[in-house]
Length: 159
Image (cartoon, rainbow, N blue to C red; front, top):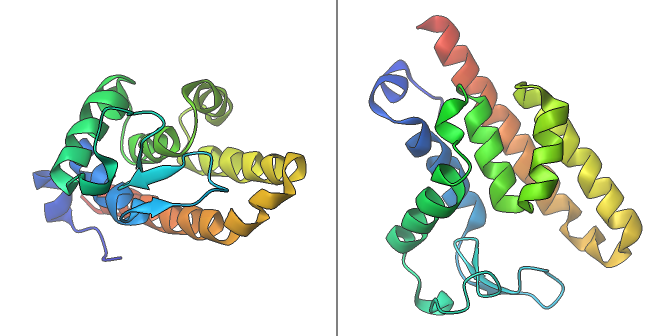
């Protein structure tokens, strides 16, 4: 991941900053029977979008879905950077009711939001040990998110 420059902060919208983190994290087509999302592409699941041809979904189609159904629907522009990036990634990974609890706990602090997500994953694995196989990927994602949010925060401080 590259360092977030002051130019990035000026030119890119909050959504662009968020989607630039999420899309590479979500990757391409996956159909893991142990994943609650089931068949997914760019993180968009067939379960949630039964009428979408998931296997042939383009990155531009995924970005449009993320903008409409995740960013705009949850009014994420109201949050400051980098919290809005962490909140967006949370909505991509979790059900809205779960995210709302995490947001309430976080009180606008991205580090607290990441902590809430780590705790959530721990509880999830306790309930369903099969999910242990996803822990490394979840941890790597949260570590990358923490680094990215830290870079954004540092860039804001330098501006």
